[in-house]
Image 1 (tube, rainbow, N blue to C red):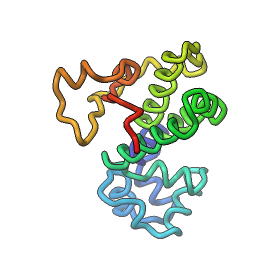
Image 2 (spheres, rainbow, N blue to C red; image 1 turned 90 degrees about the vertical axis):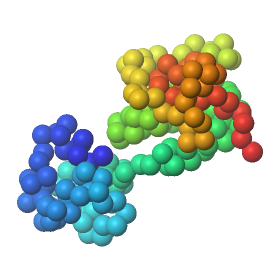
Image 3 (cartoon, rainbow, N blue to C red; image 1 turned 180 degrees about the vertical axis):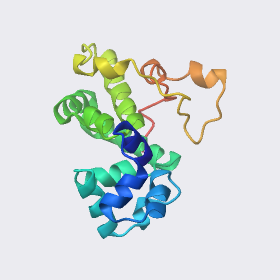
Image 4 (cartoon, one colour; image 1 turned 120 degrees about the vertical axis):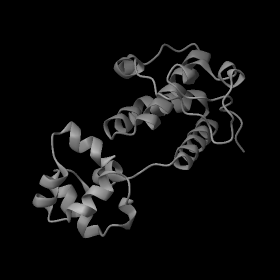
Amino acid sequence: MLIDYLQDNNISIYELSKDSGVAYSTLHNIATGKQHIDRCSVGHLKRIADCLSMTMDRCYEICRVYTANDFEIFKSNVCHDVKRRGDLGFIGYMIESDDIMINWKNERKEQAMYLLSMLDYLSNINDIPLANRYDNIRQFRIEPPIVPLSVKMSDETVDNSIKEFWDHGIIEGDIRDVC
């Protein structure tokens, strides 16, 4: 969220408002997730991005509020990508594209951790050494754990979760169960 980015960079909403010309109340609502960036004008987005010295796409990603449903769609798309590319093709693509680090740097930690969990899982079941370029983010775990919308959390849910996903705080049972 924008508020996290601003705090990490020691920028106040007031300063951003003053520098960008975007009303404080608008920025406050975007930063705290009360107003979705989708409802802002392109002009506002451009002024915010310019003040933060970033592209409009990066600014949009930082300001966007992700819902549990967005994450479910993301997970489904990743599983379909694994099915389409095959295990080895997906592993190669992940290493080549560096989507894990791109998501991590864009403050999309859940997406980065899901991709890393998938990469580690597929590497382990195919006897491929883990990509050491991600060792620095392997130490992180999402808390509280992410539970699929369709699952009620229980001890059995955790027991049936794939280890590589659970290690990062994600409940995932069967990546192959896609249409």
